Amino acid sequence: MADYVLQLKNINKYFGKSHVIKNVNLSFERGHFITFLGPSGCGKTTLLRMIAGFYEPDEGEILLNGKNVERIPPYGRNTSMVFQEYALFPHMNVFDNVSYGLKVKKVPKDKMTKRVEDALELMQLKGMKKRFPNQMSGGQQQRVAVARALVMKPDVLLLDEPLSNLDAKLRESVRVELRTIQQKMGLSVIYVTHDQSEALSMSDAVVVLKDGEVHQVGTPQEIYFEPKTQFVADFIGTTNLISVEGKGNNDVAYGNTVFHSTNPVTPGARYVASVRPESIKISLEKAEGKVNIKTSIVNRMFLGEKVRYFVKDELDKEWIVDMFDPGKTLLSGDAYVTFKAEKAWVIEDK
Image (cartoon, rainbow, N blue to C red; front, side, top):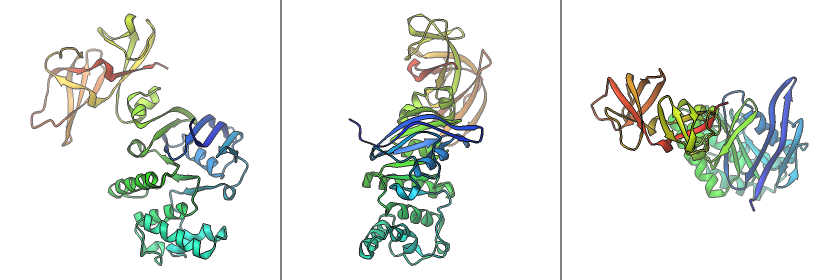
């Protein structure tokens, strides 16, 4: 039986007449790294703030270790939140910033010092406890904010886009550090981001949200390769969405091209198939045993490790094809896009 550290049951939230969180039901296993992913305004931060206790749900239950906490204020829950702006006290040094919550809880001084020093060492901040925030880089300030959360030994660590203020290279290195620390300590983490690469690279499971609704919950691989809705397919990475019709024997037809669907389909029903650009090849001739669609190459971009081709088929549909390790020869003119039938993930057209 799964060990759930947190459960959300029928959660609804309204701001005035706006229904911002719509009947959300989620369960989070202990020790997992869960990411809320979605565009701006989808409700991911609102949901996180309800878990932290800064907002109350208008309907539903929040269970932390099996106990209802939806009416308990933030200081009464054993959760810690790291904000996008870090929210460090500028007049306090690193030690005082990190120990602040422990002082409020009146933890004995010797235990407090040990916990703070352990957290600083874990976050590679040893020797910096007397520095002030304005004497530190953005990456170091971010580590202080996480250390301040970790010393509280929370049941759930909540992270609200904590890397968005860092430059791309630093963001990637801190991303690796966070995931390593989470796995080393067995932390239960809920992470909010709109960055797909962060969600896919760090998470045990991803919750994809749009307009306050959960569209899909799954592993990064499931979210990427087996999207349940057109929104998920289109939002996560780049894909080609083609309109197909169900045929007999679980086949689908795209124009005059018929291929087998790995998902059950109803004859005569309309579907959308998602085919990732890296799953497609461009060939001057038809490829044996694959789906072949006749196209013309209309544009291309050389990106070093790959060439991104833009091709148009006889139905006037534009496809994106990523050809890796392309060498110096670039293709042009008429060609076929070819892919294995199982690489086309069929979704209901709605």
